[in-house]
Amino acid sequence: MLKVVFDTVVFVRSLINPYSWWGKIIFQHSDHYRLFVSQLTLQEVFEVLQRPEITSLFHSLEGLDKRRMIEIITEAETVEISDVPAVSRDIKDDKFLATAKTAGAHYLVSADRDLLDLKEYEGVKVVTAEEFLQIFKEYKNTL
Image (tube, rainbow, N blue to C red; front, side, top):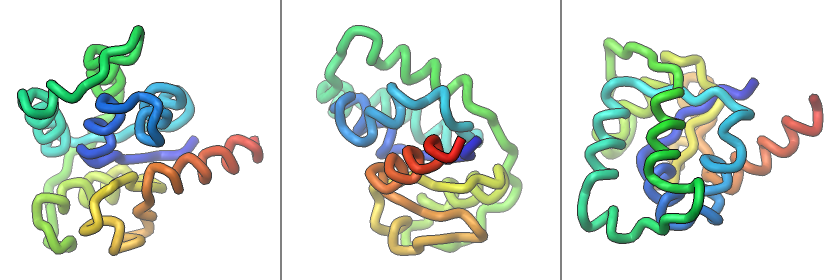
């Protein structure tokens, strides 16, 4: 099974548009990959998801709402990260790289140029949601 870490933008954009690339990954395919988080990534995700300027953009659709998102996140496997080395141009993004490395993730899915420009870190490929969906489809076809 594919191991994956999502940055905060993936979660936020999936709630803003559940039919987007991000929404499809979160709401349609969450049973087909192993999602990993860390305490640092969870803190950021939950903090951002509670911002009024963000929540006002959410589209609540039957079964595709904030509660379902929280359920998916809390079912993720949590890893302990002890070291967050400075890698990205934006040091706030390094926690996602550290989480992916510690989890032995195959992919870090992001919409953030500071992460995407890295392309790969310690064996973890950094990809967009669209790229991940294509990889995911090819992976499913090999099973």
